[in-house]
Length: 346
Ligand code: SF4
Image 1 (cartoon, protein in one colour):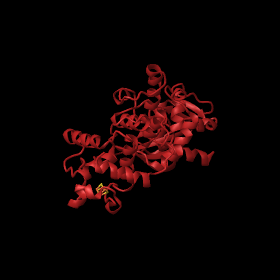
Image 2: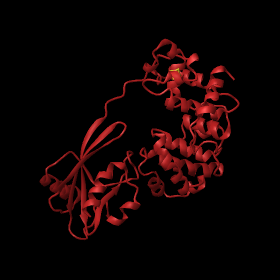
Image 3: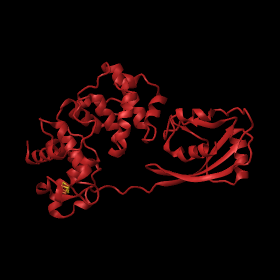
Image 4: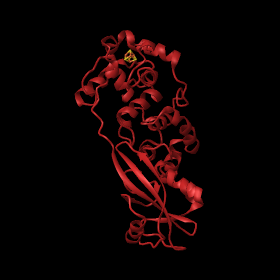
């Protein structure tokens, strides 16, 4: 074992974060935790992870659930494609591997929802296979440790980072090593200014000695998010509200209220509702503004409420949902403000 790995494992033995998905050697649970942790803070995952596993305690139980049930259990965590892929992947594992995740990272990578990072994490943590799991934390730690000053996402540099990360993984305790790098990246070698005085690797670290750790890793500039204005329509009829299950890639399978791009006067809206949704309604009333930030876009939403005639029929692609059933549907966080308008005015 090289000196860097030994120092890191000694630190991990003293300072590892105590997390419910650690020390369990259960590939399904490792997979669920890794899927939840992508783009999401540990503190948030801590409340979702036990609830999800209570609902779907085994991989076959997840595979046999409905998509809507899985999205409901994921509600509020965001990035719903992770939940959909986890569900599809679980079906694939049942069909191809009898419900048990394989230990070979190459086989894991062919399962829906498992990329190179998750394959490395599952193989090493659940099955003790000595492979790396390269995520943003690892890219940051390796770039600083070895003083890599070219674009970390560019193919050649990324390949170099992967090779260096692989070279550090010990044959003994590979899962602990990978989790130690994740912990170091999350708690000490953090984005921005790292806490080098607390770092077990400072004596080996090129960026620490060069004094430019805060500038690494070098990453391409993020594009500014596009702001899209929407009007969210709460159209009520006989204790029901008009909704549709989204078929678009963004928030697919989740239920939203009708949305019209742009912001409009009440009279314009009334006529748009008549022309687009084929419903006659009263004049819509302003019910507040909200925004939801996605990775690449921001929905700037103006909420309006109105009523259609009693027992109105929903237009094609939409359903009138009884208000008491709203809590049973998977709804994205983007609809939270509109739901609370309904709750307060019910
Ligand atoms: S010394 Fe500083 S920059 Fe280097 S690995 Fe440790 S925390 Fe990161």
